[in-house]
Length: 496
Ligand code: ADP
Image (spheres, protein in one colour):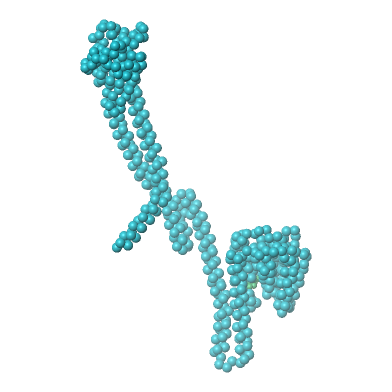
């Protein structure tokens, strides 16, 4: 039970980790951050600016009205004791208009008018009054107390001398109410925007991540071995391109898989054929109670031939695997190609002679080239062996060695049976044989030319075939200096 819950915890933790590392989560976060935060910041800045502007307006309005009233007071000789009652009414009216309180202080710092009637005749020496006496206007907004205090100097209209100070204390309840309503609206809008961004972000991140997720699922299927069907091409341009490229890769994979299967089936078939023959021959001998010794000899000769054949197939296969595997790098050294070709011809002459075939060697140039001696010997041997195998009785083979400034060429021409046009491109494929029976009877495996071509490509060279009913010529051309052909280039050879 405990372990089970432990497993559950691990699974859910890994799921959470997967979620947070997922593209969907990061898309979601990006949309949220990019969409919501700037909007919220803008709204807060706008509402603050609006509040500051409103307070400024109110301050300016009060200051102006106090200035106007102050000028009137001065003009009417308020501090001289003339027509004071009518001016008092004007002061009361202004205070009532703003629902506030106004003091008039004379140069002796004494309050000559308080619209609340509380501090009249008292001395008032607060900072703004002192500043007012010096001719300075002060205006303060106390946000916490919701209160504006403006102090303006009252100046004599003729002399310009300060004759008193008017202090207006105005509550800003109406502004506070307005700001509260405004803030509620901003908060509501923020909630609405956040909700839209949350929902929109969820939908958008789901839609954006969906094709990628689908692509991931398709890749998963392929990695489990389902390579037969292409993955669907859908979604955005990028995911479409990935799908298309992936399908191309799949097609190549299928082709490689097909070729691998074909190779395995060919190898099995080729290896099985001599063993089947050996089995038939031995069974046949065993079934005869008293077979004459000549029959034994004949059958054993056949069995020996089949074993040779099996061994040839295996050695050809090994050569091919070596050429394709990690050891396919060339062991390049400067060699005398005349000597190399001559050695091959000398070795094969007795075999050719058995069929009454003459081998001629024409050395047009003396050639020194950078080659892998073992591999090039194998390639030239294959060509001359084929020229012997597929020749006519009493035929001839002419090997020509030539060179120019950059390449040398070996041409193996024969007076043989020729290769039909349609088969000339296929003969380099593994196990391809035009006449299976003839190839078998001459000990062919169908691998010789594919091995040869692979070797020539590793040498950065080319191999061409020209054939007619009168005979065939194979021409190999190889650079005199092995100009660093990469292994990968050679691996692109389709036939192998
Ligand atoms: P094999 O082991 O059968 O000779 P190769 O790969 O060497 O296999 O050659 C492939 C096929 O090409 C041969 O089976 C043969 O039919 C044909 N071929 C190769 N060389 C010659 C040639 N000189 N003349 C005629 N046919 C040839």
